Image 1 (cartoon, rainbow, N blue to C red):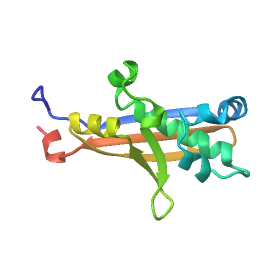
Image 2 (image 1 turned 120 degrees about the vertical axis):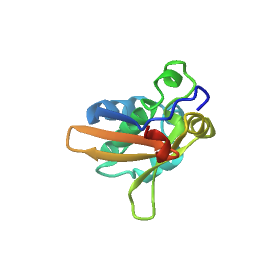
Image 3 (image 1 turned 30 degrees about the vertical axis):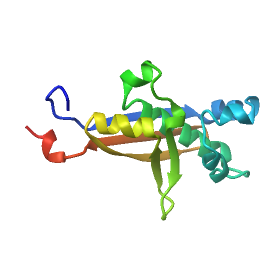
Length: 140
């Protein structure tokens, strides 16, 4: 890192009420939803039962990812659209970062972001973890 310190593992967590996301989906024009969710996220969530909970978990994941970079988030340098929640070949969630987010990850000496999502009938939660690119540098 530029200041000579070793990067540390970063962790962000967020929980959102599913009813809040349902209100967002019902009251927001599709074009405006695309500032939060990608077309792929909206499509992957489907149209049936469970769509709102799926999108709520993805919203929580985006917020958890933003918490990894509190300064840049507060300055408006990154936002929810800089983190897309996709599925890997086994259906597990993974984060696809925008070029801005990738630049931040590199600048902070971090590796990719891992996420875990969960939801029940009323809320959705997510945890995002970014570890140092070289774990050996985090131990002194």
